[in-house]
Length: 120
Image 1 (cartoon, rainbow, N blue to C red):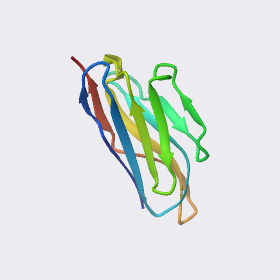
Image 2 (tube, rainbow, N blue to C red):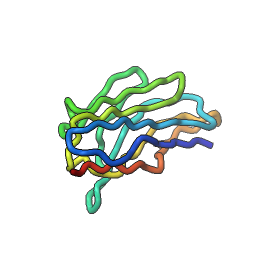
Image 3 (spheres, rainbow, N blue to C red):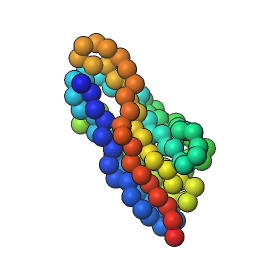
Image 4 (cartoon, one colour):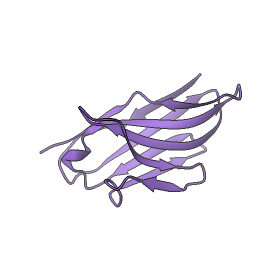
């Protein structure tokens, strides 16, 4: 059984910073791409940033230059450093990982989400 658990969300004023974490645990053989997605009220879930197991990153245009995605392969953690936050960054942020289990089954797994609210 594989589980992803996010943490680090909260409320912050515009211009502030937050750091999200995502911990992967369970019967994991290997983790391929990992990413952060977000969903604002009334909108579809969208990709924020993605990172390969080798550290290659890609960002949505809306967060490029403000957010930084990183991972610790040994600890099975994913991070998202969010700086210069804007009200439009308000959303539930989800961690997603492409994981091969110890049963040699490959699936996409999602965390439960963490709320980020940017407001004055």
